[in-house]
Image (tube, rainbow, N blue to C red; front, side, top):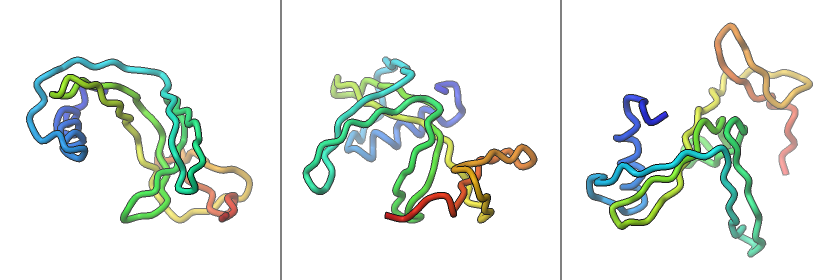
Length: 124
């Protein structure tokens, strides 16, 4: 993953998003198979979240709403403030507006995409 052509520039943009505005001076990082963290829901309830490489996750994206992705990498990187920050890398699912009746997601080998089954999920 770290050999991807835009890895350093994407990492720098991620640090800028969290308020770290200077160039990255460290190269210390570690890769992981899973990450576990606790988050507080809007109603004050705490939930433990487990993320594994290869998991399909729902991400609420500002412009597109509910989107889906596959976790491709989990890593920590040392910021300029000597603290480590956790990141995930993902591959987004493409919404191609096709419907399948019996599964959550299907893989279309002809177009090399995972497709969400819109009718399998019930809105809550």
